[in-house]
Image (cartoon, rainbow, N blue to C red; front, top):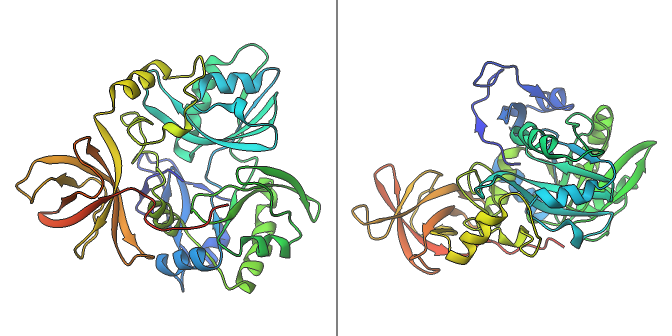
Length: 381
């Protein structure tokens, strides 16, 4: 999930009605607090729990998320996989059918249009899952570049997306007769009560888990069964508030915060998702040049040494509020696991791991230590 949260309203800032997940009525019935995520009305947290309880459930047992707002696009036709590999950053040739890969769509300057997951079904069939707010732009750019015979089609409401995350995620899926135990970043096609479900070993929490893609119209049926199994396992349904605290503890990038048209994969330390040996992809020349020269700023973690929470957009200084500015926070939250404030920040190259800095929290100095994420140790495989 990489969409900025806005205040819960019935429409977007542009006045357009918010789109709804196939589970909207279930979220409302569960007392969920709803908000705008990339033009979609989605649950932040549920009544009787809250972000901290939902976060703890995922870390300790299991949590269930509705992330159906995520985009879906299909690239199909002879040479579809080769086309995807020629435009997106990561090297799709390193995986085979049945595997998934984290990758990015960049512009020619090396800025990130979006980060997404590519699911390679076959050489002529690739499913892309971008972020909700960026799907149309990714599809537009790829449609404009697609060769004859390759079609790029947005399929936003073809699938729902349900994330089962946590140490007991296998137990939950097994209770429904769904397959478990396949390799990390792989997926299998399954049948659940006559409903086709893509079971993916992916997620955005750092915990062992799965993402399930049922047909849009069957999403509610599968959700109900998963809620029952999660409850039996001692877990909870969880909103996108907990999803954000979980990903921040892992140091995972959020588009619009740690990745953007102004923040390159090199600056965000996401170069591992770039196929540097590929002859071409969008933004290659700019990214290679930046890598060779050394980025002027890099992404670090900040661990609060005082009481306080460093939110995003706060200035980071070297020595006290009167010191030199060395960067800015990109995300910040209270860590339910560590019980202290944490943040991600883009900092000048002169800053090193172990340095102490100060975050200007609305005129108050918050001492923080520069660390390399993740902030917590978890088992993802």
